[in-house]
Image 1: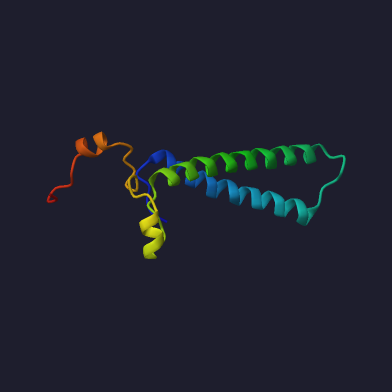
Image 2: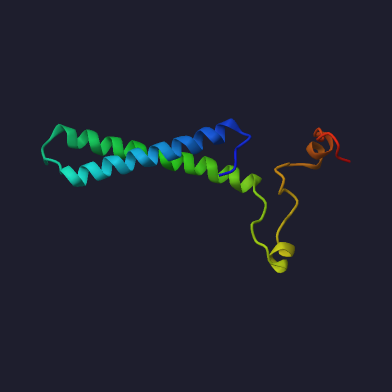
Amino acid sequence: MVADSDSNIAWHRVQLKKNRAELKALETARFTMGEIASSKRTGQTQKSIADLKRKIAQSERVIADHDKRTRRPLTTDLRSLSDGSWSHWDAYTSQQQRKTAPRAPGRG
């Protein structure tokens, strides 16, 4: 996985991995050990699962939105590359930002 320059996105990626692992553990335990139908713990487990699924969906949305704004096209055939929009592949949103952005030393 590529390191993220945006700490918020990096945090969401870590939370996504952690929450998916916790959800898997909860669901595995629920089916392995079983649950008593009238148990108070049943409601708590279902509430925890619903909360984890909500957190996972939120992180996935944030990451997908970030990826949509910043990732360049992944296709490699000439036709797909020529049909795609390359105007924002480098995450700049306007020409003004591109002109004022600092350049790396030793480049142009």
